[in-house]
Image (tube, rainbow, N blue to C red; front, top):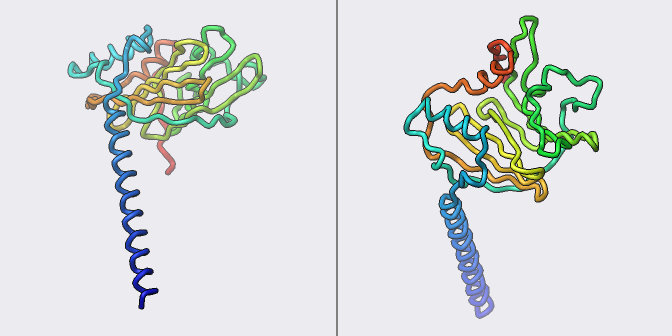
Length: 225
């Protein structure tokens, strides 16, 4: 009888410990979410002409948009994996992408947003696929590494370097939610800031970026899924 009583007491104690741990985890998660929302994207940390042009474009579409309305949404490590594009050092590299390469300040590395996402048809119009691969290319080491990937509902519209180890990605989505991702290559870390205001007007930023480089209006492939 006593043995059964002690087992019951032990089980009740174990159950209370599990519930307490669960409560602590929930509180920690809620606190982290709250702390994320309190971390604001400081324009002084990421501003350059690319960001200013990007934010000005969305301000012209929606006067309620503000570049000061981005707050930390996520922070995680990056797994660098081999990319699926040709580097500028490869014989198979298509020179049509040359004007869209985003070089680091030292010119040793560059970001490629385009090679995976679109190609050119017989009318010199870009044909877009549903997915986008963001690749880091090291010219001196002749390596191509994928650092991010976007499906049909999110895409990177532009990018630039703050220094030789820091990249900024300017993103949009099918829901009209803008994001700014700041990548630290040294720490292999990405911080993503989400805009608190949704853009309801249709964006043509990606198309205009290509047209400014002399290409015709693009053609979009339907998602095969």
